[in-house]
Image (cartoon, rainbow, N blue to C red):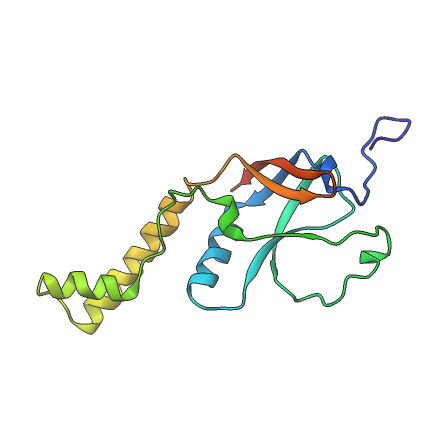
Length: 154
């Protein structure tokens, strides 16, 4: 939507969103939290919706009932699982048991070596997954699926 000046005017319809900016560190942290069994984190796009939006890290279910969200738009925020921002061939989060098994196979296992090797595996994953972002995500709208371009920050 635009007003008479041509400026974006926000509204409840997510199909106006052309692009969403997301901080790479937010996506990495949210994926890692899920892998570690922590409370589910999502990337939330909050109405009113404009052509260019920002998705911010948010604890899923942390806000209660939306009702008339923030008193200005009758629309719920969009919650996107952080994995949706990663390509299907993104590196998998390291498995602590697999790291142990590799060390044992090489005859190098002890607790401290395991701790160090796992920490290094996680750091390597964090670096590698930063290059595995998708160019777009699709959200469901009343008019059907809507593709939104992803803009990486950081």
